[in-house]
Length: 488
Image (tube, rainbow, N blue to C red; front, side, top):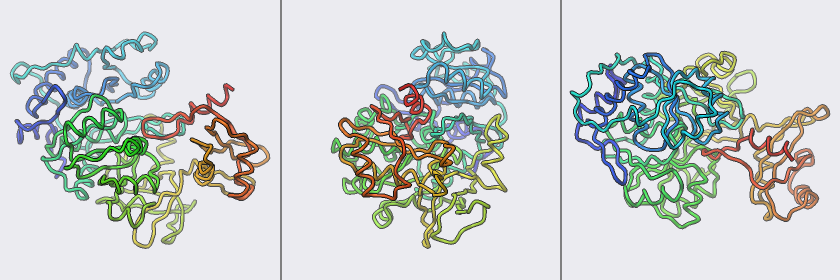
């Protein structure tokens, strides 16, 4: 595999024109049909003002037309910016401003959000998408392909609440697929289930992997757990990606994998030991992965056999990916010693768009500073300890929020919890916890914790809430949680 000098869809449709690119309950699209529809869509978008270099927001439903739009935008030489369709109008407005979006493509399902968005160049999908099958019906000539060009701007799914727009080139997308191909031996016979939203990198890369290998992407009716389960039966995929909450729901419902499922990539959040082992026991071919929007999805992977022996690990680096553990001065630490995880790989982002300060913090001497905290054992396996954001320094002592959180969750009256630090003039930072429980008092919980951990680790403030807001990647939405707490 190499990134080539032609647009990937043009190459794939020339090699495999009749191979199925996309599949849904009521439609099948070949690679040639996908090319023809994308070219026609390019012409329509160009006519409506989308030019080379334009940043184009996409706010649309989860169906194959999303990738018709992506390829059409690429043909123009413009840059797609997928937007989270679950955001409020205000949040969408902020992302439009931050990414300097000059055209917004949406469909009627989300048109109700648009009146409150101060944006003029809004394009409805019905005005640009086409099912025309004859390539001669369009005279659009795609721009020259360059692997170094920007292919994607995507907002992170991180939990800090601060907007970061990650910039990826075609080369970084390609490098991500190459690395996974070395691990999983991808093939044109693969059927990928589009089981994650496209405005997250884990979802976006599913059709990209298929496009580069000539495989098929099957579309469930939605990314809900119920529709994903139905799609497993209907399409019999060979590859599927899930976040821990979705897999847990399937296990709770005693759902079994389809017979020809080769890999279940499990990522997007903390994959607890018990969940992985229970899934394997139920027959799921689990591959634990670690990555982020900044690394263009997974940079480590761990197959089922290794999970059984090292269930808390996130695996080993993929092809051409280097991972180091460093101290606060960016010096490497010995094997088995914890520190910050830094990554060097072809799939690492180019920059954070419009944010030189954050880019300089994240990219240093060719390495990406993840902000994650972990270690590598003497066999080369990576273990994630916590997010650096979750390292709370209180009264001169280090408290790992995840550790406190896990102990709180041991209380049978607690259904969910999240531990975090807030600035405090006395302690430097104060350990706090949001807790979901119907009939547990603060005094009872403190008594329970005193038996489990040192006093300085016990949260000094507890916030009992009805639920802890999380995004689709199973990460706590700190911004919404803090708004919820502050409104009490």
